[in-house]
Length: 75
Image: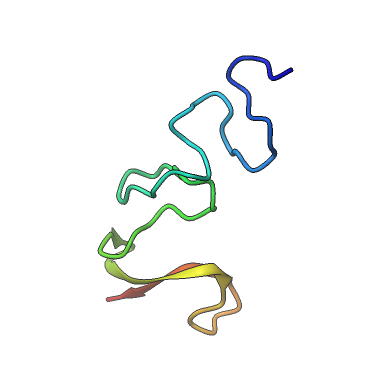
């Protein structure tokens, strides 16, 4: 039995909010991970003085700095 408000699977990152789940589209610029992929950005978001121009499908070191990224920024 599934208690109210909880997901039957482990891929939902916020069981307390039905609007946040892996099937949702990401909404840019609100610092919320609606689709539970760990990424908070969409192409066109303004972040850290730049604009997101690419979203990686999985965390990848996109700029060679040794840190895995979800997005590539243009400044």
